[in-house]
Image: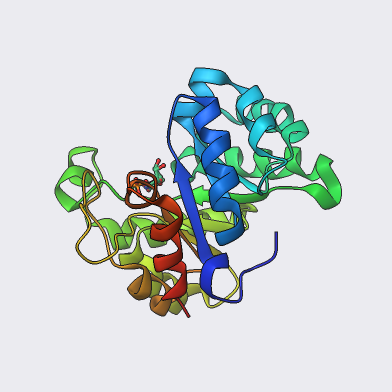
Length: 235
Ligand SMILES: O=c1ccn([C@@H]2O[C@H](COP(=O)(O)O)[C@@H](O)[C@H]2O)c(=O)[nH]1
């Protein structure tokens, strides 16, 4: 999947539902106005690979399963997912270099069709206090940069981070890493459980390649119009 040049191609709607019919229908209506669609844990735990098979013919799939286990197990999970031909796949950077290296090695078996491997850094729902409760002092930016270095050194193609860390990552690592950014909220929309947020325009201006937007699109009265309004305002 090529790096987007701007506009609607930068937007990845997060389709969080347990209903595969709704997922497929949303993907069909949103696909012409976006770069890919994101399917995650809610759909996959409800319906498994079949849900991905239904959506994959409609739009490139960012499969956000956030794999996090011992290296052998994660490598096996990546091998099992390859037949679904996801365009992008996530694993947790906190799983460590050996785990991410094993995932990369397993993904290589797909050759040209290898999914983009993205390391999730610090979840966008965590602030400094919540992160400290997990034993990590120093705040999100420091931890994101630490995990970014580890992940990029271990073979990840890019990172998932909040809009707040995009600038520091670009300063530290330049243009090479692909940056996929959730925690994005159009001005005036409900933040919900997201904590480290910014607007779509702010995220892209900071250097995000793709932005992930879920509920502000899927919960809108007119999801196509909501997506178009976001994509249309982006550089
Ligand atoms: O740090 C992360 C990593 C992944 N996500 C996922 O992105 C979407 C965001 O949905 P919204 O409705 O726009 O909040 C969701 O699927 C998360 O699992 C994230 O938010 N933060």
